[in-house]
Amino acid sequence: MVGGHLDSWDLGTGAIDDASGVAITTAAAKRIMDAGKPLRTIRVVWFGAEEVGLFGGFDYQKKHGSEPHYAIAESDFGADRIWKVDSKLGKDREAEGKALQLALSPLGIVPGSLDKADGSDIEPLLNAGMPGVGLSQDGTHYFDLHHTPDDTLDKIDPEALRQNVAAYTAMLATLSGGIEPEPKRGKRR
Ligand SMILES: [Zn+2]
Image (tube, rainbow, N blue to C red; front, side):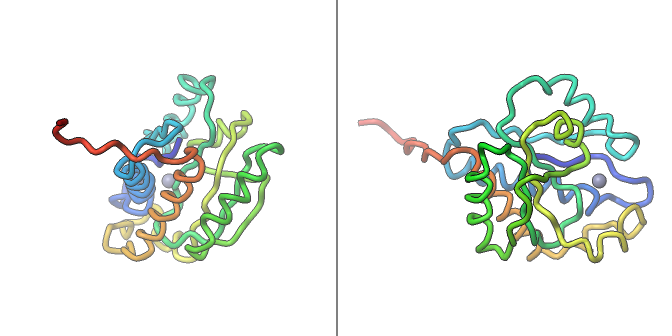
């Protein structure tokens, strides 16, 4: 499961917090869809009411927290480049965490902890022990814009945004267990 939150703070339009997170994770899932059929289901969640108290995250936990999730991740720290990958998939799945580190290294992403994951809306699920991944974005300028009227689309660097989508796509491709190309749909003879 990947996602971000739909609501934003009063003053800005919410480009970095958190429209970019919604866009990055959804675009990555779309890329996987376009490539074929993943062996595991990819669920994209656009959480609501995060800013006023994580209500969407808690509601998701209430409704879906008992369903098995292979891994969860949330993008909610703007759209600057991802520089580090953390994961907390469990002791017996550290090899997968390392495979994920390898898959992301061509994008300039360094390996982080194998015992850590974060995300605002998914925090209740992580705290309950669900396996998770954390892709850390460069936050150098995040708080220049966060919750201000300057949180607008023109502040987002398209090149950094593309790197984010590429990273989430590689992460989903790795953890969804592989992609089966769809058979060509054409006229049958
Ligand atoms: Zn946010």
